[in-house]
Amino acid sequence: MRAVLMSRFGPPDVLVPAEVPDPVAELGQALVEVEIANITFVETQVRAGKPPSPAMAPQLPVIPGNGVGGVVSSVGAGVESTLLGKRVVTGTGGSGGYAERVAVDAAGLIEVPDGLGLAEAVALLADGRTAMALIGAARVRAGETVLVEAAGGGVGSLLVQLARNIGAQVVAAAGAEHKLELASELGANVTVNYSNPLWADRVRERLGGVDVAFDGVGGAIGRSAFGLVRVGGRFCAFGMSSGAFARIPDGEATRLNVAVTWGPQIPPENFLRLTQTALSEAAAGRLHPVIGQRFPLEQAAEAHGAIEARATLGKTLLLTGPRAGQSR
Image (tube, rainbow, N blue to C red; front, side, top):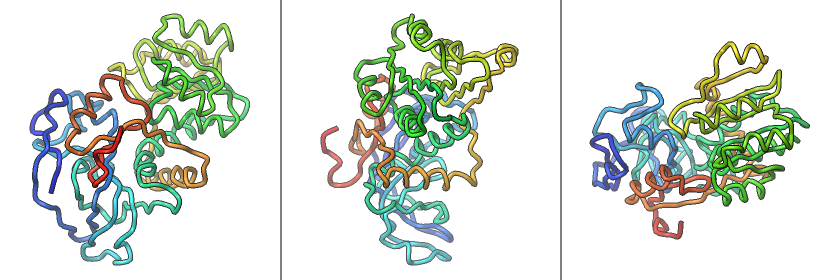
């Protein structure tokens, strides 16, 4: 089968198309004919040899990819045959996703609801779960003011919508005007470009501050976002696209009575529930994943390069099927 193989860590071109043996569904597993593979920003960090945690570095060589969508074509022993032919999304356990087929734990399969496209379901597989967990952890309430950084990205664009649906006033922050235009279309009340060094001052002048800040950038931008949080507010970091999390001294957070959380703390037993909730919200028309780019499987390197260059909007997907060459 066709796949993308990584034999060393480094720049995007370490992702090389290859022919590899087909996987086989063993005990408790299902074989999924992959149509769409998910790409996350963390995967670009892992590929570069700079994972957020050393434990995330895989053994090489490896087929990257941790999220896929497709149709179940066979099942192993101990798995119900009723799964055959079902449209599903699932995690792969950390690797193997950039390929035409994957053998995965059947217990982790999530059936795609009627009325929801497979691409949309894959776009929500990781980002939807993350956004739902963040909104819950921050306890966002109607009438509050919520700042969302990286508002044009996969998780950020979902946070804008979820906070808006609750009834919060949403401040969307991003580094490009077209990303801010997207955030406005998704329901943001205020937009601000953080490529302007005075962006936080402008938010403060207009709104005084925010009750909740979702930090997807880290570094200096995340530190400025923390400075906007009102006494008694919440600061939730979910990414570090700048290369490092924001530095928030414990004493300062305690003095201001600001609750700080680092990343969505999701117990494994909640993965399925949170993803299913996100899919149900999308099927009901209340949540719209933004898919900005679709690349053929063989162009995984180009996809990673676009993400690292901040040239993407919303979610980036890899396509393995006959429509893989369609417009991005």
